[in-house]
Amino acid sequence: MPSFVHYIPIVTTFIGLALAASLFGRYRAKGGTHLLWWTIGALTYAAGTAVEASVTLFGWHEWLFRAWYITGALLGGAPLAQGAVYLHLPRRVANALSVALVTVVVIAATFVVVVPLNHALVEPHRLTGRVMAWPWVRAFSPFINLYAFVFLVGGAAKSAMQFWRRRETRNRAVGNALIAVGALLPGIGGSFTRFGYTEVLYVTEFIGIILIYLGYRRATRGAVATETSSHDAPFPAPVAR
Image 1 (spheres, rainbow, N blue to C red):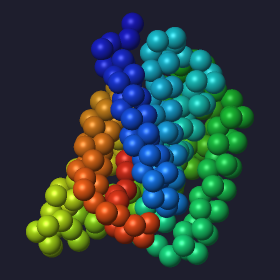
Image 2: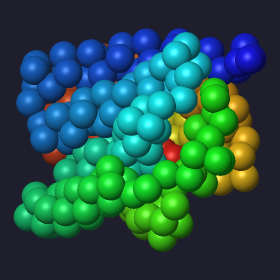
Image 3: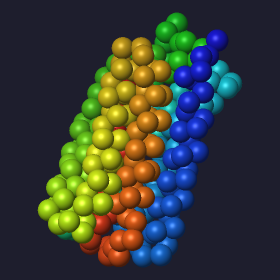
Image 4: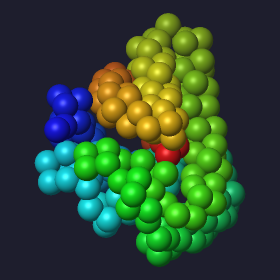
């Protein structure tokens, strides 16, 4: 029987969708490739937790597992990181990194779709990458997650330090600090899934998205941002599974 913790992703999904809606509204108002990537990232974050919620409500299914691994382990942080790339790096470099990232994700996702699953390791209401019969498929996610971690957490920390130097922008510094902390939590929770403690991930995803949403609102409150401005901030951390 699923416990209370297993139902947390339901709430997390709605918060993720609210963040995506806010980001999309900002994108429509001011444009910016980084905002488009962040919107996609918030949607994939919400998609991952929606799959977790579906497993709680309806039980484990092969295609729910595959969808969870793709949206969580491969896309949980990558699109958000790419938004930070477009914000902080020259567009030519960002475009090249986009091609590389999408190529790696597509290759990894293809293997996730076709990998045989060891049904003897399946638990009715718990998701874990250990059920994949080809263990090497899980080797893709650490590289994608490291890439995401550098730009997500690094970008938030950089923005926080820059804003803290000026009294009038310290409110945004606090917002970016909240985002940086929130960005770390899902990654920490994701590492626990490798040892079978998926429930830790559910809690850290929930707390993380709350901190990220609050940080985003505070960092952008009253800000007059431009596409190349650092007034916007990176988003949640990758999830290693």
